[in-house]
Length: 363
Image (cartoon, rainbow, N blue to C red; front, top):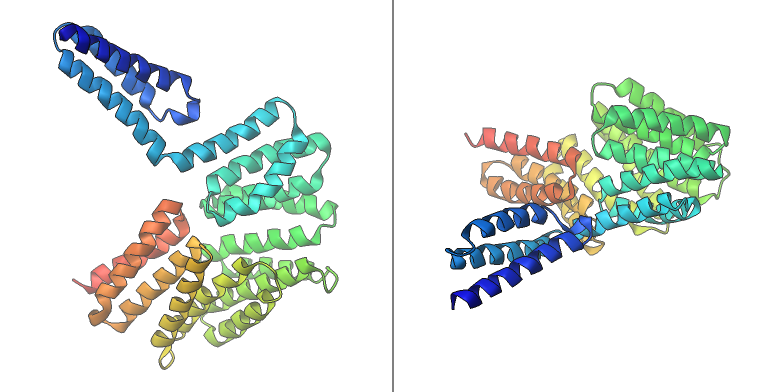
């Protein structure tokens, strides 16, 4: 019996070792260390603690299975980056640019920011090999620069966006210049105490937008984004009526764009402005707006906007008073859960402030 158990244990450990060392490196997730520990322990207990030996082997196999179950998304994203690494090693620069361009928006909307930035860096290195300045501009401003803003790396984001803007100026790429300036606006707006500099960058963005011919889809997009950004600026300055006017203009402009994702973010911003205005019935009106936005964001699986609308609802219920604190807590908890999963660091900061405010009120 002991011989049989020993053989079974040996086979299980060999299988575990084979799985750990033969699968691609992206799949291992620490299983190699576990296997090595088991191999050492097996040498010690080989003849005297057979049952314990088998148990350790079972733990190894279970750990590997769990790695596949819980890290599927990470595995896919790492494999995706590895794809670009292989292309770079083979000097297939055109393929890097082609795939990088195709994946950029999808990675942004699916909130895979770190992967987007990593791939952007491959494009940044590949583009000069083919003198592909357009791709280089987009990599610097969008894929690396703007994504770095999302990751709260403001200093590096500002530097590389400015590099992209200078390159875009040499190409008369008014669309990307305007986007770059608007991204710089967002960096300074987010930091709160530098509104003058933020406002200057937004003005620069509008000036570049005006250089595009009427009817150009890029111009329509930039105009919509300008009004959306200006609504945020005016709201921050306390000019809530003007902010509402700007968000209405943004909404009209977004309706002219083919992508539904653009318009989905209107509700959350409109709800924020409405709540901040503190006018008659503003809280209940904001709740209606946020609920509408929540429904839309769920319909189109736009999780960032789901977080924003849940956060807005939490703020509304805090403002309504102690009878609604449970509703506030529920919405903020749901928002935080999604934000943590997606690594939405900026939104997490806002959510935590609301939770702290709620906790203080409940003391």
